[in-house]
Image 1 (tube, protein in one colour):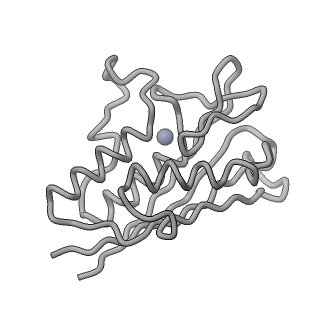
Image 2 (tube, helix red, strand yellow):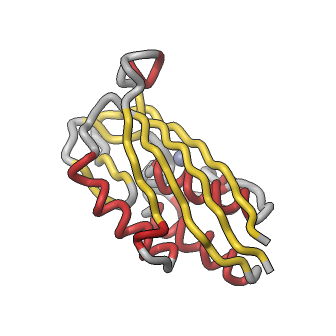
Length: 158
Ligand SMILES: [Zn+2]
């Protein structure tokens, strides 16, 4: 059967950290606060995949109390989740995600994010959708306090 899952994540901006989204380091004065590299896009996709598989969220797999995970490259989280699904005989059909941020402009980086995520998920880039939008100046995202990401994933379960 085909199953789908949803993921949502948000991280606040922090000075003195690199901004990493979909494994791409983006030229920007602020990074995101977090225990890992705070890659909000990877986290939302990992949660969507885990949801589709009926599993607990990434906080269970990668606790933010684990010092060994500090600064972790979140593409590794996505890869580990995909490997977990493979071990459960679950195949990724597609993922689609939207980044929500007033800045930076994401367009120049979307293809790189897509390529990184396709590689981590072991699927064709045509099965990975990565989009970006602003929050039209509204609320915490509109004030530029952080970046949010929403994702859906569909998987084939035996
Ligand atoms: Zn996160």
